[in-house]
Length: 261
Image (tube, rainbow, N blue to C red):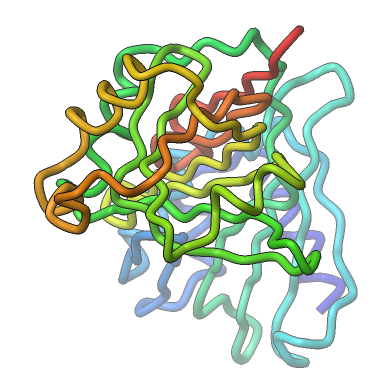
């Protein structure tokens, strides 16, 4: 296995298709988070599409999970570079590679920017229910226990705040008067977009804001409260982080917004 390890490290440093062909089984596969490449030629093409591998420092990880016939290599970018760290799991049989699994190691470092959601991100959150991607809200109840629920009435009030129509049965309005800190999650499984949000909730103190939140809600949500008995809440966001999806080299359009930066 040590000889194969050294050979693979050399190949990852940049070698020809013929060099790779010598260590790959004819029916080899290459798996990523969202795609499988089947057959030696397809695997070689995939490897050729990852030139950043040649810039990484590769070392073996001693992990038992994949089994004795697997070789796990971790590729780390130079200290001064901003690239991602990759982990490749090579499954072997009779000295050749039968399968490669690619994953990322750790989260990417995204520089923090000021809290200011752009129109694209605001539209994503505003259309969450219509797109069948309702957001999840987490808060702490009066007993100090965390609670989570899907909220169809969430909408953006501005670049740094959200609005929420909190029906009385949820007890959210009562809870945030004791502990205003809340967290939210948005997930679009089709695009593989994920955003986490954190902020402080408060009861809307003016009728104009209350009316704005009500009027902007999707009709299915309005039908839950014909009498307007709920409490309108404003969430002042302190952090928004996430990405619009994942590509071959990592997150697409990552964001890390922080209030007060």
